[in-house]
Image 1: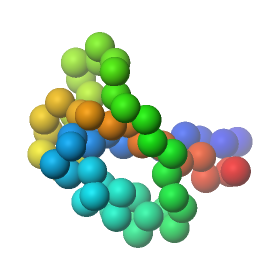
Image 2: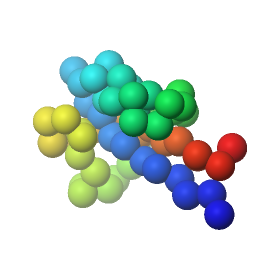
Image 3: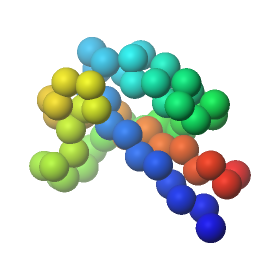
Image 4: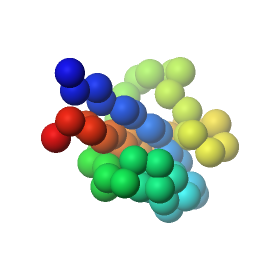
Length: 60
């Protein structure tokens, strides 16, 4: 079963989040601008509103 892992990052912390994802998964994530209305989505580093949504499908 493929399980998608999702992270969110603000403009200020995108580089840190990218590094953490690659370090943790050994995979390069896919990335898109976050345009959602999900008020619960927060930057994984500082908790501010995210600018990006990143994900990794480990089974691919």
